[in-house]
Amino acid sequence: MSYVDYFGMCLEPFSNAPDTRFYFKSKQQSEALEKLLFCIDSNKGLGVLVGGVGIGKTTLARHLLDSLSEKKYESSLLVMVHSGITTEWILTRIAIQLGVEEPANDRLILLKQLYERLIQIDQEGRRAVVLIDEAQMLQSRELMEEFRGLLNLEIPGKKLLNIIFFGLPDISDCLRLDEPLAQRVAVKCHMRSFTADTTATYIKYRLQVAGAQKLFFSPEALTAIYRYSGGLPRLINTLCDNSLFEAFMRRVDQVSFKIVHSVAGDLGLLQQPLNKGTSSEKFPDLNEIENMLDRLEQKN
Image (tube, rainbow, N blue to C red):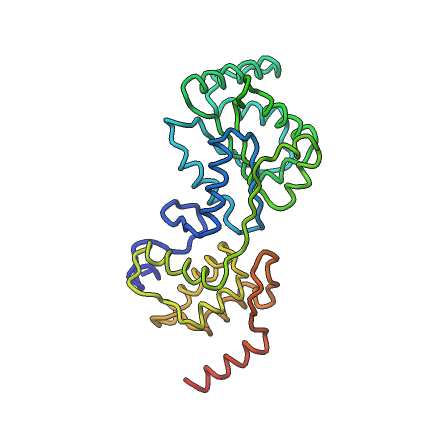
């Protein structure tokens, strides 16, 4: 038996694997999505979404991609997996993703092929969109110049290609490698950590999607998850997943403060610094936490 069966759910609620079923429509994510769609639908050219590690950038990128119907858009998502990417590779991949058949090895010929394909997409009444995840990996002036060149593929009064970068704050340094490209950023969004209330709502939502009939976390446990995760969705998932497993191992029906505290210790999060993107809400320090544990011990 797994903890999913033990708690009467049909899905694992806190996996960090991308799953559109668990997309959480928070206020800031909705606002970011609206801004990026505005950038695309208005043919602004270049949009940027910035956020720290584990904040949910990839989830939002995938949700944006799913929101772009084939009838209106020719869209693709490219993930930059390392910093050794070349201009030849990126240009070829974008051409393939946008439907260029048999892309040429010669750069000038390939650019001509891509331009003709973009014209075709425009004549079909659609917009071409390329989403670039982990864009902070684009760490050379040549790559930035290549993207500026792609944004120059246009017809009178209209850009033919929209590009959205998703990346860590370091992406600003990458853009500054080519100042003319940095000046072309039409829309820029910043994603920040969840507040305490949003953290609790997020946990409840994922449990509901997984088929849970009740909340398996005590109020004190929810507070501890927020404190130790700093409001970062990835860490929230990890803490909740491990805490539910620990509750299953102990054969209890609720995740307590003590369980979360123990799990946070195992994960090395007891000294977790606050994420810069978090709100100004006051967190309990470690002495307060130890006192809370003592009170719980006395209560029990």
